[in-house]
Length: 157
Image (cartoon, rainbow, N blue to C red; front, side, top):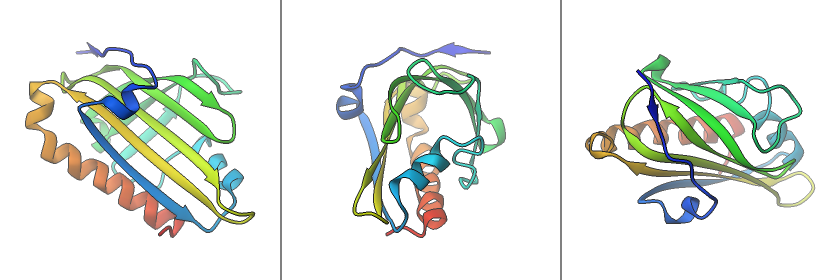
């Protein structure tokens, strides 16, 4: 079964009822980190997540992809509404296989911090349904796992 979610705008990333964010200080150039975030194996280091791009390259506003969480326990379709090549991209979820959220968006921001360093900020914004609120502790653990895996992958502080 598929459940439609509400599209959002950039302001949702700061005004959502639930926000989770982590900033990683990475001893690698920003271009390298960006390259991994938009690669065919994007976020492949996250054990609880599997990503598949569903749009052809070059990517930009309108790009789509599919994500599976926990082996497909949750499947979502994503639509990119913001794309600044080499620096930032953000998507909202258009549909999911469970009625856990009214809206979901994620923002990935990569900023140089010197020639061989960068900061990567990953923001998750959620508007849960009643079911999603009941699953809040589990969702928190899932995102903690994704952030922990990212920190480990990039050997970030």
